[in-house]
Length: 621
Image (cartoon, rainbow, N blue to C red; front, side, top):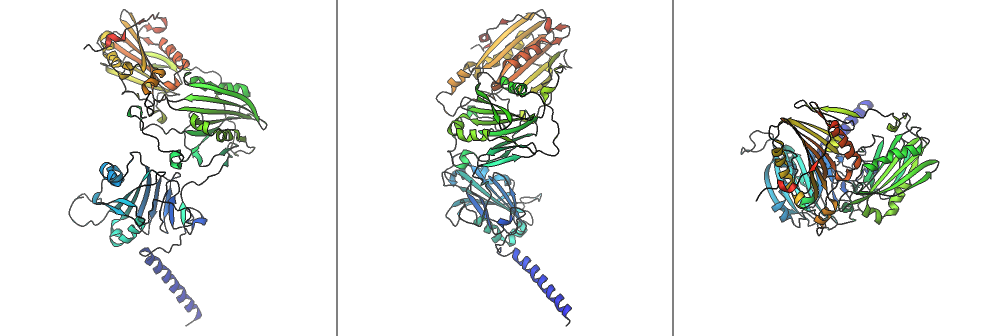
């Protein structure tokens, strides 16, 4: 046999051995040698478990695991081709206060069914792992067969196993839901592989085990964050990360930061008590951070520093003066850069007050705004931390090579700021500010519900109506209704006002309501004002520490109700209490003066209103 032939046979034998070994390994125990550094790093190649030190769990990791890592880690997803399986772990805050698995079986079926509620349930039982930790286990099969309940052996689909664990550690007040979904045919031949993963789950994270990959962000020290696109740097505290907080004032030249974990998740404080049902913020509202930081590159305009700051700081005039206070302001230098810092105190609800620090910086005409926002309680506990953040801001000499001139809106000459709104179904036009937009941006959806009681209609009995809604930052809504209504004005107003005066807001004096009337021939105008009384809200909440009223959700309203011949109109301005200010109200009153209905020009009317007695609209006993 020639030497070349021997070499070929040898190579062939090695290749066959490698291939057969790989196939054999699929159904056998993993070797423990993991090479997935493309997912993590080369330092992780010998790790065979994955977990989260903040949420306190860990689980076995197959050697070909592909990890879909959530930055926060409260939801973990992993897939393995060799196991034909997807593995999910969720750490769910125990908001209901379950103290046993039996309570979860009785009252927490949604936790057990999870996303596989449409599958056929085959078992529901309790078990115990090797550490003695009890769990609820549910198994089910999902099949795409039309005849889902035919009594015959399942031939294809997905086998699902869900295990529910209840943490006994008071610091980690979580319910853990482990879900494993495996190809049904593969499961029928390799049940041991599914239970190998399931039985490896632990409601514990062993920090001394070098073979566990920690998914939690473990940056526990201060660090410098540099933004080389816009040329600045700032110090970040432990566990703070860049966020997707949408900044309404600036564009994507703004970068925001907030803590990755809450105090409860870090074990710094206990779980917050549940709020009274009458004060719960709607579930679709945006997440509100207790502390966050944003840095914005605004412009490289050569406008003077003082003029620029005076224009920028005008935004504080949009706050309700009862709810905002300027604590201090001072000028300073950051290296060769001019700067000015403002400390603001903003009361966002009865129980929650925020401190906001605004730093304005001008470095060679490059202008930045740094905003640090934190609850007053947190700020008072750790002033040094927040002072360090705001004082660490520095301008870097290097910026992106694509960087060019950025206009500042304050440089623009005054434009025509009004536009005309017309109705088609009724004669009507009104001039309003161009700040009001017809289309509703996504970030407005959460803020327009009454807290004390359900929303109350502004009018009843309207038919053939046309509605125009306009939205303005910060969060004001202007609604214009117009259409045919042949009922007399007195009847329409009576039906409308009866609802208001029978409301909880009126009866509790949480809201100050007033109705003014003007009448002349075939024109009747009613002006209704609806303003929350902050001091009375405090009285309502007295004695219940969990009851709160959010001043972003509560809406002050001014409604003009106009009856002209067969037409009826309502002009309704709704403003969050937090942003109720004289500027917005004054603009609105000027809008009303611009109304034209047929040949009637409101600017030429001498509107002398007479106050109506609201008590007369109450239902008679």
